[in-house]
Amino acid sequence: MTPMATGPVIPDFGTVSPCVRDNGLFCADWFAANWSSVFWPALAQHVRLTVIAVGIGFALAFALALLAHFRRWLVRPLGGLASFLYTIPPLALFTLLVPVTGLSVLTAEIALVAYTLMVLFKSTLAGLAEVPEAVRRAGLGMGLTRREILVRIELPLALPAIVSGLRVATVTTISVVEIAAFIIDQGLGSPIIQGLQSPFNTQFIGAGLLAVALALAADGLIVLAGRLLTPWATMRRSA
Amino acid sequence: MNSAADIVFDEATKTYPGSVRPALDALSLTVPAGEICVLLGSSGCGKTTALTLVNRLTELTGGDIRIDGTSIREQDVIALRRGIGYVIQQAGLFPHLTIAQNIATVPQVLGWPKPRIEDRVRELLELVGLPHGEYGDRYPAQLSGGQQQRVGIARALAADPPIMLMDEPFGALDPVTREHMQDEFLRLHAQVRKTTLFVSHDIDEAVRMGDRIAVLAEGGKLLQYDTPERILHAPADDYVARFVGTDRGLKALTLRRLSDLTLEPYAGGANGTALRADDSLRTALSALLAAGADRLPVTDADGHPVGTVTVDLIREAA
Image (cartoon, rainbow over all chains, first blue to last red; front, side, top):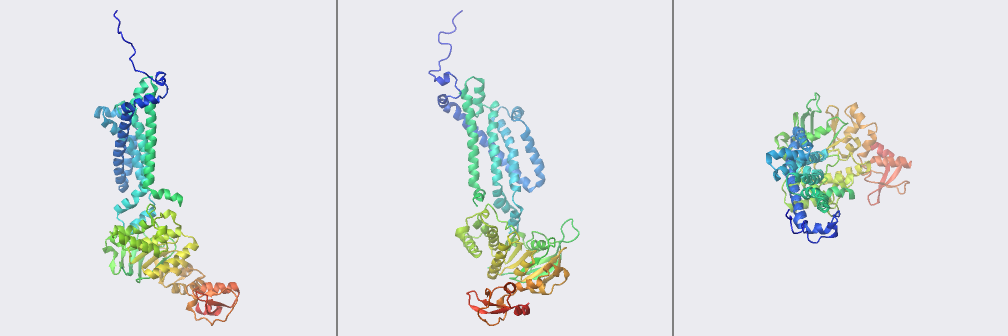
């Protein structure tokens, strides 16, 4: 038998910190060292996937909600369709789409958008329906057109409901994007899945913590934007 | 800009779909330009229907309504409504807009230039007693019910419409605020002289506010259209008499003020608190009864004596 190798069998990782050597739960030094090669790209991809999904989902849901607001008979079929899409488990929807659109970002986005539709459709529609009858009647009586009532009264008054819909949709999408790592090598789900397959803790705990931080930050940003857009809703309390 | 216009109901009829009996049955009456006409009746008598027929929130099913001689059917509905001020019970202010923005709504959709809108808003807030500096940037929820309704009235006046429709505008206010708002509106009306249709179920309010009162009964039938004095002194039938109440003799006293009477000469320190010349005869009678006196001194607004009122004088005037 010839010797397999002359050098060390275990590859040389260079000097490692005690934390990495002992496989601690979270090694900040390793996290920092791999930030630009692993975590930052994954975070950026995660944000992009989420923004695209919520953006397209909101545009679609908003248009459908407006349509249903003016054509009330569409409320049930459209709401039913959105609810149906929402009931399919994410992983099942991904696998169902793979034969059609492949292991692609498109597949991931189609599924992600489908998940945002129900909550965004229903919250927008509910916000429009909540406008007090006296307010709508006052607008009509003073000679506003249907379109002016929509733009000047109904949409601004629906904003708080739309904002809460966006919060739920965004936070949900951030979690579902993690599952999308099963079909595309993108987002914070990727380091988590890879990390789970190795015994090294910092990779998946770091990525997991980032996902939590992202969800909290996104939620906070939307709440803040909502407050800025609806000063009257917070004024009420100080009255 | 616009002077007031008269409103003519010509057999105006509304039968709602699925209903056999009309909600308003061939109403014919004329509201002269600049006057306040109170549509008075209990619920279900069609008074709100009559009101909303004018701005076509409800469409006529028979007859016609003419404003300044032009049928409302012949006008574009949006243009028609923009020429009519509309005030509803809960004010119906837009909660997401400031007071100034609420009032600016119709001028904005009419495309007025910005400076003109700002001037108009300032002027109207002044007119309803809510200085722009203090209230213009507040939101409706930060105002009391009475203040909200002032804004509602200012908003209705924004584009200087010749006509005002007021659907129980003070119905949701407490009695003290309501009375105050009634006085405020009368003061305002004396300045702007809009032809006003005013819906009420309250005879006291109708007597205070109306130049004329239209008493409506169930089924939208007009029972009497007359001045408050005539309604109180000569009710057309038992229904009107019951509706105006058995105290209509007292109510009639609210219509006249001490300054309308030829008072007896001032006789010096009669007992009791002095009455003011602008007090109503009802207030005077009440004060006489409360003081247990036959006569009380009357002063003008500055407290200078102007004469003496007696129980006999009031009885003769009633």
